[in-house]
Image (tube, rainbow, N blue to C red; front, side, top):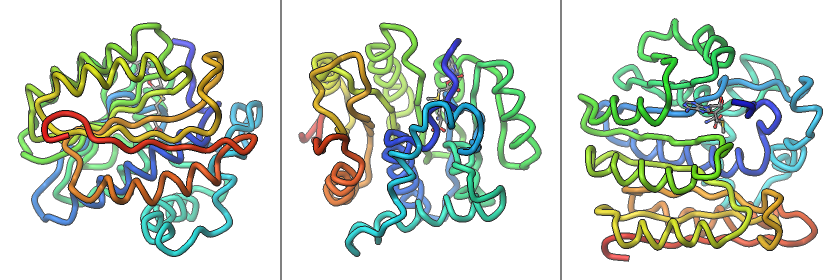
Length: 282
Ligand code: SAM
């Protein structure tokens, strides 16, 4: 396990993933009934952008670092809950902090909701536990995220969100994302699933969505932000989030957010996005 998220925190992919994570959670919280939120590959939860790791890559500069200037109002309206979470975390932990998914979930969780954060890296799991284990409705588990996913669903709460955000260190992890999400949806069909994936070359991603379109029993969305031409598979050209059981307005919201983010976060003038439905009714 060599991947450490501290090198990448706050980059364009984190921004895209976290903006959508906040939107989905906020929508689910329009109802009072409790939610279960499961983060299968959680990382350490909070990152210092002035720290050694973030400083060595500087990736955040072209991610959250490009969000200072405001967007047109309709984009700002959709970004507002994300900006609020980042601002609240910074007010508490320092202005150079960037929240990972656990800190974002913690900010948004209500008293009736429960969160479970899973992290396999021993040192990262220890940091995560120190940060979040004392919060009464949060639990940090030291387990393999894929195993934990199936052990934790269906939860006793009928509603909830599973974030699956693996490091893609192994060559089969994109196929595995498809396998595991399909198995999980069969086990807990009403849960909302958000699975992040890197876009280097588009062919393996297209293959994943052909399969999901044919086999997923629930509706889904393929949401992508491309900051560079996906013709060079050696670099990260884009960030993708597959969402199963999206709420009905998420596609319209993504069609406002993703082009604005693509324009703002693109490299060398290339900026593109994709927002497509898959599965039943698509
Ligand atoms: N979700 C985090 C966020 O948005 O802030 C970032 C997660 S990072 C992309 C992936 C994390 O998965 C790393 O912290 C890595 O240590 C952890 N990891 C790697 N293999 C794992 C496994 N099999 N089970 C659980 N966690 C794993």
